[in-house]
Image: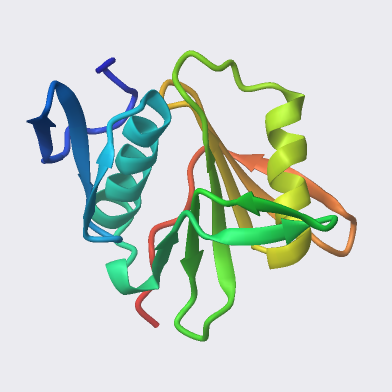
Length: 149
């Protein structure tokens, strides 16, 4: 797989019947190693091992309804109170991040009302904080670390 713009992590990969699989430490299962899954797993490891968000507050690839259509979000991080604080959209490294990527996460965020948004293709990462009073978002240089208070 392609080298991504993340710190090095100890990510488990195995080969079975000439297919590569990657272990998800949140879902505790092996998944087919696709380019998007490669990015998703790096994002998960980044949130846990670099930004120190507890595994217990992270949820991966669950269904949501957007305008009556079933979709799947990539990663959600909850606060200790159960509010969504980070919503992450992962793309394959081959996919350029465009306005469509931000439109997609914005539609998903209508459901979650997350404080922070992350859009990443593993090579480029965009971090935003959402201002619900002015209905816009501000780009950040990075997402904050988990606060234990």
